[in-house]
Image (cartoon, rainbow, N blue to C red; front, side):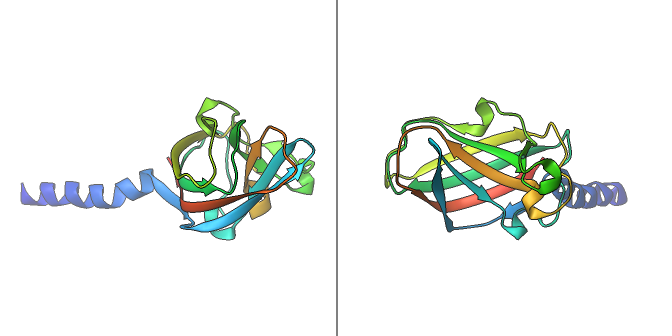
Length: 159
Protein backbone atom coordinates (compact mmCIF):
# COMPACT_ATOMS: atom_id res chain seq x y z
CA UNK A 1 0.00 0.00 0.00
CA UNK A 2 2.77 2.43 0.91
CA UNK A 3 4.63 1.68 -2.35
CA UNK A 4 1.48 2.27 -4.40
CA UNK A 5 0.82 5.57 -2.65
CA UNK A 6 4.43 6.65 -3.18
CA UNK A 7 4.18 5.83 -6.90
CA UNK A 8 1.01 7.91 -7.23
CA UNK A 9 2.58 10.87 -5.39
CA UNK A 10 5.74 10.69 -7.51
CA UNK A 11 3.71 10.48 -10.72
CA UNK A 12 1.65 13.51 -9.69
CA UNK A 13 4.73 15.54 -8.85
CA UNK A 14 6.40 14.82 -12.19
CA UNK A 15 3.39 14.50 -14.51
CA UNK A 16 1.59 17.75 -13.69
CA UNK A 17 4.43 20.04 -14.84
CA UNK A 18 4.63 18.10 -18.10
CA UNK A 19 0.89 18.49 -18.73
CA UNK A 20 0.93 22.24 -18.12
CA UNK A 21 4.38 23.52 -19.04
CA UNK A 22 5.10 27.14 -18.30
CA UNK A 23 7.01 28.14 -21.40
CA UNK A 24 7.57 31.80 -20.72
CA UNK A 25 7.50 33.88 -17.57
CA UNK A 26 8.76 37.26 -18.72
CA UNK A 27 7.94 39.06 -15.49
CA UNK A 28 7.83 42.85 -15.76
CA UNK A 29 8.97 44.76 -18.85
CA UNK A 30 7.84 47.49 -21.26
CA UNK A 31 6.86 47.23 -24.93
CA UNK A 32 5.68 49.86 -27.39
CA UNK A 33 2.71 49.63 -29.74
CA UNK A 34 4.01 51.49 -32.78
CA UNK A 35 1.71 53.09 -35.33
CA UNK A 36 1.30 51.21 -38.62
CA UNK A 37 -1.36 52.46 -41.02
CA UNK A 38 -4.44 52.94 -38.82
CA UNK A 39 -3.41 50.25 -36.35
CA UNK A 40 -0.97 50.05 -33.48
CA UNK A 41 1.15 46.92 -33.52
CA UNK A 42 3.97 45.29 -31.62
CA UNK A 43 5.46 41.85 -31.59
CA UNK A 44 7.01 40.13 -28.62
CA UNK A 45 9.78 37.87 -29.81
CA UNK A 46 11.79 37.59 -26.61
CA UNK A 47 13.92 34.46 -26.94
CA UNK A 48 12.94 33.11 -23.52
CA UNK A 49 9.18 33.36 -24.16
CA UNK A 50 9.03 29.94 -25.87
CA UNK A 51 12.60 28.80 -25.28
CA UNK A 52 13.04 27.55 -28.86
CA UNK A 53 9.74 25.66 -28.86
CA UNK A 54 7.96 25.56 -32.23
CA UNK A 55 4.23 26.25 -32.11
CA UNK A 56 2.42 23.30 -33.70
CA UNK A 57 -1.16 23.07 -34.97
CA UNK A 58 -3.45 21.64 -32.31
CA UNK A 59 -1.55 23.02 -29.31
CA UNK A 60 -3.25 25.36 -26.86
CA UNK A 61 -1.77 28.14 -24.75
CA UNK A 62 -2.86 30.37 -21.90
CA UNK A 63 -1.40 33.83 -21.40
CA UNK A 64 -1.85 35.54 -18.03
CA UNK A 65 -1.08 39.26 -18.05
CA UNK A 66 -1.26 42.33 -15.83
CA UNK A 67 -0.44 45.68 -17.41
CA UNK A 68 -0.89 49.46 -17.63
CA UNK A 69 -1.09 51.64 -20.75
CA UNK A 70 0.47 55.06 -21.32
CA UNK A 71 -2.74 56.39 -22.90
CA UNK A 72 -6.38 55.43 -23.39
CA UNK A 73 -7.25 52.72 -25.89
CA UNK A 74 -10.80 52.64 -27.20
CA UNK A 75 -10.78 49.78 -29.67
CA UNK A 76 -9.72 46.15 -29.56
CA UNK A 77 -6.46 44.88 -28.14
CA UNK A 78 -5.97 41.55 -29.88
CA UNK A 79 -3.23 38.97 -29.31
CA UNK A 80 -2.23 36.45 -31.98
CA UNK A 81 0.77 34.22 -32.65
CA UNK A 82 2.28 34.83 -36.08
CA UNK A 83 5.15 33.38 -38.09
CA UNK A 84 7.01 36.52 -39.20
CA UNK A 85 9.76 34.87 -41.22
CA UNK A 86 10.53 35.12 -44.93
CA UNK A 87 9.57 31.46 -45.41
CA UNK A 88 6.08 32.32 -44.10
CA UNK A 89 5.81 35.35 -46.41
CA UNK A 90 6.37 37.56 -43.34
CA UNK A 91 2.87 36.95 -41.94
CA UNK A 92 1.28 33.56 -41.32
CA UNK A 93 -1.21 33.47 -38.46
CA UNK A 94 -0.65 30.49 -36.16
CA UNK A 95 -3.58 30.88 -33.76
CA UNK A 96 -7.29 31.45 -34.18
CA UNK A 97 -8.56 34.98 -34.10
CA UNK A 98 -11.41 34.79 -31.60
CA UNK A 99 -12.82 36.46 -28.51
CA UNK A 100 -10.51 34.44 -26.28
CA UNK A 101 -7.54 36.39 -27.59
CA UNK A 102 -8.90 39.92 -27.07
CA UNK A 103 -9.11 42.19 -24.05
CA UNK A 104 -12.47 43.98 -23.52
CA UNK A 105 -12.48 47.69 -24.22
CA UNK A 106 -12.16 50.53 -23.43
CA UNK A 107 -8.89 50.67 -21.51
CA UNK A 108 -7.83 53.80 -19.64
CA UNK A 109 -4.33 55.16 -19.16
CA UNK A 110 -2.46 54.39 -15.93
CA UNK A 111 -5.06 51.85 -14.80
CA UNK A 112 -4.00 48.31 -13.95
CA UNK A 113 -5.69 45.59 -15.99
CA UNK A 114 -5.41 41.82 -15.84
CA UNK A 115 -6.54 39.15 -18.25
CA UNK A 116 -6.23 35.47 -19.01
CA UNK A 117 -6.20 34.80 -22.74
CA UNK A 118 -6.51 31.45 -24.46
CA UNK A 119 -5.07 30.48 -27.84
CA UNK A 120 -5.49 27.42 -30.06
CA UNK A 121 -2.88 26.89 -32.76
CA UNK A 122 -4.39 26.25 -36.19
CA UNK A 123 -1.06 26.23 -38.06
CA UNK A 124 2.53 25.29 -37.27
CA UNK A 125 5.46 27.70 -37.16
CA UNK A 126 8.18 27.18 -39.75
CA UNK A 127 10.79 26.66 -37.01
CA UNK A 128 11.57 27.22 -33.35
CA UNK A 129 13.06 30.61 -34.24
CA UNK A 130 11.63 33.39 -32.09
CA UNK A 131 10.45 35.36 -35.15
CA UNK A 132 8.58 32.27 -36.36
CA UNK A 133 6.67 32.21 -33.06
CA UNK A 134 6.02 35.91 -32.47
CA UNK A 135 3.20 37.06 -30.21
CA UNK A 136 1.69 40.03 -32.02
CA UNK A 137 -0.54 42.61 -30.35
CA UNK A 138 -2.80 44.62 -32.65
CA UNK A 139 -5.23 47.44 -31.95
CA UNK A 140 -7.71 49.26 -34.14
CA UNK A 141 -8.39 52.91 -33.87
CA UNK A 142 -7.11 56.32 -34.61
CA UNK A 143 -3.98 57.72 -33.08
CA UNK A 144 -0.65 59.06 -34.18
CA UNK A 145 1.21 58.43 -30.92
CA UNK A 146 2.77 55.17 -29.88
CA UNK A 147 1.37 53.44 -26.79
CA UNK A 148 3.68 52.06 -24.12
CA UNK A 149 2.54 48.91 -22.35
CA UNK A 150 4.00 48.43 -18.89
CA UNK A 151 3.72 44.67 -18.31
CA UNK A 152 3.53 43.85 -14.61
CA UNK A 153 3.03 40.13 -15.21
CA UNK A 154 3.41 38.10 -18.42
CA UNK A 155 3.18 34.31 -18.10
CA UNK A 156 2.64 32.01 -21.08
CA UNK A 157 1.67 28.38 -20.45
CA UNK A 158 1.42 25.56 -22.97
CA UNK A 159 -1.64 23.52 -21.91
